[in-house]
Length: 95
Image 1 (cartoon, rainbow, N blue to C red):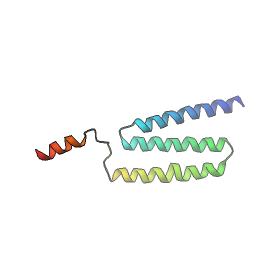
Image 2: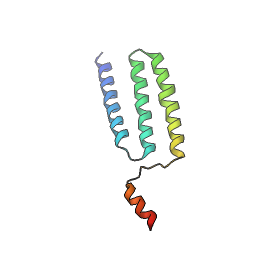
Image 3: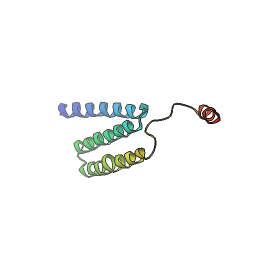
Image 4: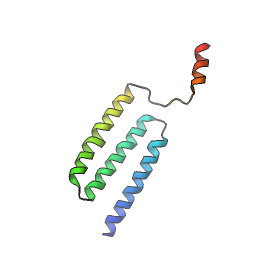
């Protein structure tokens, strides 16, 4: 029983760390990978908590489908978030 509590506690800490990393990451691809890791950890937690149907759904939708759709979208757009504001963009257009 104590091993199970330690495993769940460790997974929850990694889950919180991945969530914070995904929020503060400037590179969108790494943020999407972090959200995929969050979904993977949730899948394991659902399986440990004896909800295999929810775990399979989370694995199929959260880990696979959503991550693939986000990666395809990022591939067709800019990968990095712009640091410059709109004022800088207007100045560069006038030059």
